[in-house]
Length: 106
Image: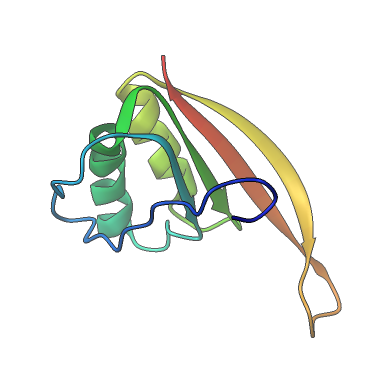
């Protein structure tokens, strides 16, 4: 237990296949929208993984296919709240801008 929270349940997934793992209250992913095919598969997978009141938190450093993911999810009636944050990267002289999306069913 860390910060008073239980250890999260995690899973290694193939985004191109719907896993039989059930639905979750929270799905977290980071830097996963780097290929068009994977982004499309991810947009089909997220609705399967989220419970009715669930939400997903996705962090993206401005990958090329992030707008496609947003478009596909919104077409499936998901809502986005997006926060932009700067992240300091060790060994680099500049910060990286990261978009953090909170995604819910509309």
